[in-house]
Length: 251
Ligand SMILES: [Zn+2]
Image 1 (spheres, rainbow, N blue to C red):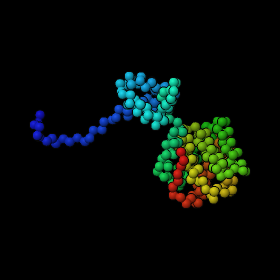
Image 2 (image 1 turned 90 degrees about the vertical axis):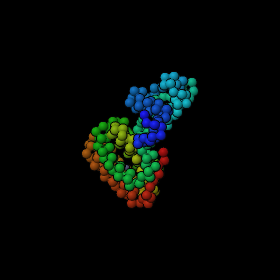
Image 3 (image 1 turned 135 degrees about the vertical axis):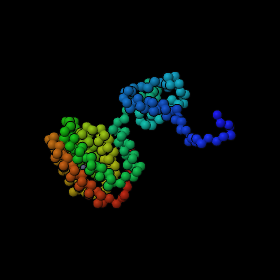
Image 4 (image 1 turned 45 degrees about the vertical axis):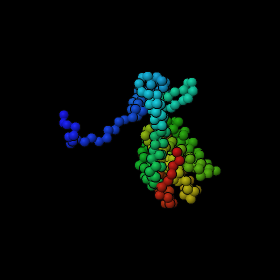
């Protein structure tokens, strides 16, 4: 041992000690994400968790609050209450992507580019994997978009429903999450009556119908090609009149 006065050449940075609630939350999160804890399973009651983990009541509560904010548990009040496991869904993914689009002020042009990359592939997959229920959803959206008395918001909603419907028919959860978020953002970005005139509406309704037909016929190549043409044409028309360099998305 050196004397008290000697200086060591060794230096240490500040040590980052993880906080107890974070440690417990991480432990539970891993078990939820790995599938070990099933959807809807009840976590032990608070006092039971305190006993099992030997952590304080405040720590257990804070850990559960962290998981609740991350949408990984649902806390119900009352006698039959408690914390219940909630596994991530495409809806929670869509929400994260929406938050990113909004928080980073992603430009409409970038949204459109992403859509052009993803949607033709969604349409190809949809042609291979679609079910009768998927086709019924697309038919409903096609009926709504062609309704003669539809106002702008009804038109845009039918547009979103159809595009999300194609993604759902792809049966790929990542694509569904991305497309749900992108479609909502594009809805907001194209909420422009000057752009959505009668001819844009008619062309959109026609394009949706012809892509739907290819999906129904299980013709993946045609579905992809028609979707590419549609999203490209729509993007070009929207960007021509888009004066804004950023958009906002409502969650
Ligand atoms: Zn469309």
